[in-house]
Length: 542
Ligand code: VG1
Ligand code: CO
Image (cartoon, rainbow, N blue to C red):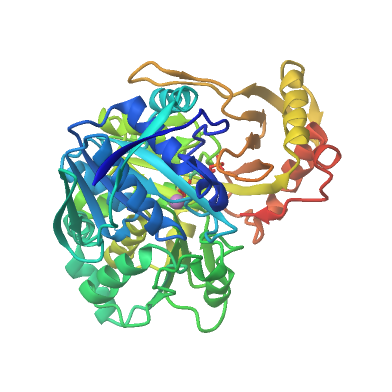
């Protein structure tokens, strides 16, 4: 075994985005690329003598990347790496393992909901000792380190066999290979009333969980079918594959359409859910209903106390700025704080650590709590199951009751994917320059109340994050947010977030797009989306 120092040069464009560094797989597989980024992480955070956790969502190149990272960890003097068997760990499970085993940090190999394969996407994310994504101070330091690289260090050796649980060693570094599901499943059992959920299934309650050929397959099969007694076949697409069955592992009505079609059909189960590539997102469905992620967060905030892990109530809640304000009404009714943060789970970490928030959520199908420091797809599904078991109500009834009590926030996100980056930047620049003049203007019959670019001051560490999305609010409670994605790998993705408040439960629209028609028109008038992007409309509406 030999320690090699390979001369290298700084590489441009390795700036971590909303959630780690995401690039085309071919870029990560390119000469020195993965190695450079890993060395930059080591240089920025210092890993000598530390314990790290390593795992990924099983996408193409996951296995090869794990071997490179292990050899580089050994070269950097890491004392121990805890690896999920087969180099697999869902994002929430990795977060839990970092926390429960007192590791100093971890590397998650995933591009989340982005497709996988040689022509698709790969990603690397560094998490810190609280189990959460590195905050901006650290991602900035990693980015700076990519610009001053002169060499990377790696041990030359055979591959480690990661298929067998146990302990091994690499050039003086200890490697512990663990069951990726066990610790996580045990944690879930401490939070939820498993006997009650088991009784629900025994009573004939039906469910489908679509793992979308991604990492939650083994987790869902073990917990739902083996432990909670749901019949075999409850979990669909439960075997992870490197290209996710040639699909997008994104749990929304577009990419998980077969599941949505099922719940809208006569064969609908009582409850259905799906999760994404790395297992941190969730989609919730009932017979004939799709629960928007923003509504799901509000419902969970209102009823979480029905699960044993949250019986003492919530300390506070937090949502990302573009997420609908449905949860704000629950927080106000309960008299707890509600925080508004920029997009990306890294901004929740301090609020959770400081005991200010118990539950957090994003409109992009992410919900989680202080049990880990990542959003957690299966956790959200289990909390819903616990609530359904406790109340005996259907998903549809829970939703209508919620709207009766708190009013309803119609919500939709329109995505314009892979648009020309230059055009998207110009569109945003024009919009942002106009903001001071917008208040008072009447557009699509609505009066603009305020317009600004969102900036966030972290109440715990005082850090400031600017340019976190442009928001335009109207006097009738309508709100439009414009934002460019930080997770795409080609061109730019424009996200337009649309929200309309309806207090009157009698005024219900079946299609949220109808309820939002004035907001949709106003978004176009204000931002000239068609003119800049050359698109007639969004290619994804969630
Ligand atoms: C998107 C979502 C954001 C989420 C991020 C990572 O970011 O909008 O809410 O935190 O993906 O999700 P962006 O910058 O493309 O809008 V994922 O499931 O890493 O797990
Ligand atoms: Co994800």
